[in-house]
Length: 198
Length: 153
Image 1 (cartoon, rainbow over the protein chains, first blue to last red):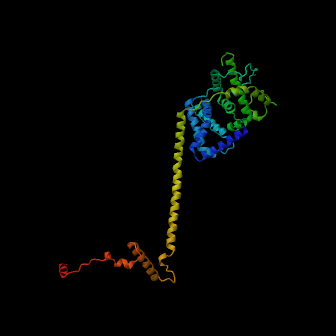
Image 2: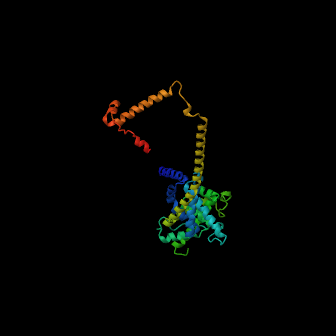
Image 3: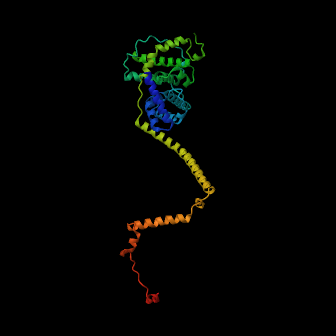
């Protein structure tokens, strides 16, 4: 697995080198690798398909323009998600000038609610379309801060350290946001499974 | 350890770092649910639009390079021309040099003789020049001028 990852990394670095020489074909291969995940992340962050598509294009355009500045300290994946996150934050700021953000903005200041032992195991639950929809909707109602941590950590598998650096917050804050986000989703899923309102 | 660490300043009240780690472990299954959410592949229109923008960007950056190379090439050609001119001015002309101890007329006569012989040989297809000159076909018909011709002129 490690060898495979190393090979993948080597191949990716070779692609990056080609892209630095403004090789559009090579850059197209990088886009192929990451486009679905980037668009998925941006769509969940901005919750508007058209805006998400525009922002996602901007992510790749900025990456193409600034690839010479990519120093390889982080992975390309992390670098792309950082660009995507920053563009989403910019977009949210622009929108907030006109209308207040909807969502659980003050979730972080809430008291911790004890989580009862789950009577269900998500791994054994068939993740049907309805469940996917419940999770999507639950994630969508999170505040931008909690949503970004949840998506970047649980969906995109970025580490605590990477998130701390990307979001410019301490590792402890990353963890607490992640916990609060999961807690919120868990509550909605539990309600759904109990046939209640989520 | 209570919530005194400044790195945990956003922790909800009344929770320790160990408790937080435990809670994260307990909610790991939620993380898996989130991970299983699917990402849709973008449309062909989206991709085509992105490709178009990337190509436009490349084209925009290309003229700068061309301009740079044009300037560089012009400088190189100008330098080369100046160098050639300097050499032409500074160096003496070749046809003014006469090798010492060689008689030019003697050389010329040798070359002319060789050339005449070769030309003659090629023209007649034979190396026997005297025979060719004496052959009947080589006779030239001449017409003598008469007094009448001269008066007409």
